[in-house]
Length: 206
Image (cartoon, rainbow, N blue to C red; front, side, top):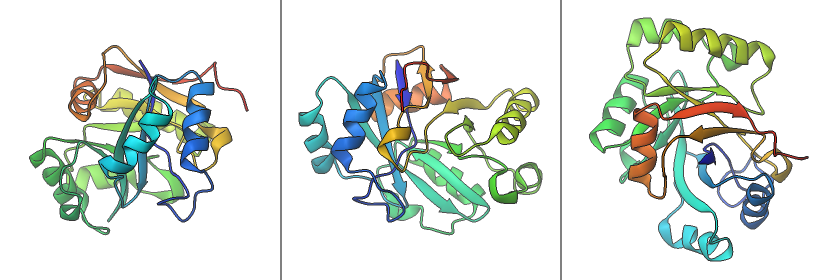
């Protein structure tokens, strides 16, 4: 199943331009099987997700969040209490809390904006489940450096996403999972089980 697991909407992310229904329509056009909306430090409630599911029943629609952690952004999936992962939380504490709740944590766009990613790993030892290896906001150099990280840290799951803030970027990169994903528990298991392969989505059209 092809998923885009990093995207933002104008409803809950002030830096995004996407109307949620436009985003869903773009995901269908891009040939995705599912999406995970990850607003900045906010997780969509189920009642709002149900609006989108009713609009596009053919698409699996889930929510995680992109936590603005101390050290960088972290994509978090499967959380039941987002108040326990506040903005500015340190990565080790963040990962412990995500795992305590049965979730998965994936570093967003490693090394972006000069982030000393490997220094953070060495000094803080956060228990990451994976890294984002490609997105619309990762240039060729960042993607190449992420590929090297996968070789050095083979226990990391790999995610490909759009990091979309506009409808036209939805699904440009995706994660192709060798698993059936319909719930947050399915998603977490697929990520932690390294069932996904990050790829540029050939079906995406701008």
